[in-house]
Amino acid sequence: MAKINKINHIGIVVPDIEGALGFWQDALGLKLDHIEDVQGQKSLVAFLPLSESEIELVRPTSNDSGVAKFLREHGPGIHHICFEVDDIMEMLSDLKSKGIRLINETPLEMEGRKMAFIHPKSAGGVLVELYQLT
Image (cartoon, rainbow, N blue to C red; front, side):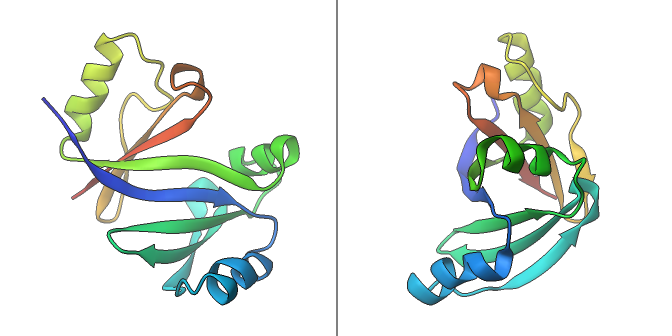
């Protein structure tokens, strides 16, 4: 049976990464590792490592992305929590067999990782990302 290893990251939607870094980096003391243009998600992401996980500040780069819609409807704030799993295919299969609504029934593959999202309607309103390092 697939298992969750840890919280990989918490994604926080922001309208302005530089402005948000004023709190996360300057006030709290987290260190910015890098900023990445994640074109597949139409987002710019700032990665701030914290122990074995990280905070990801996510800014939409397109008005038609899911992140942009979230920002319009909810404003800035926690967008998703990401769990690192040992076997994403097995986890997705198990969740599907339990009637859990998945956004991605097959993981999206990116360099060094596979990821998939669970629909918030199955998780008490929380967008959950599953993540497997490859």
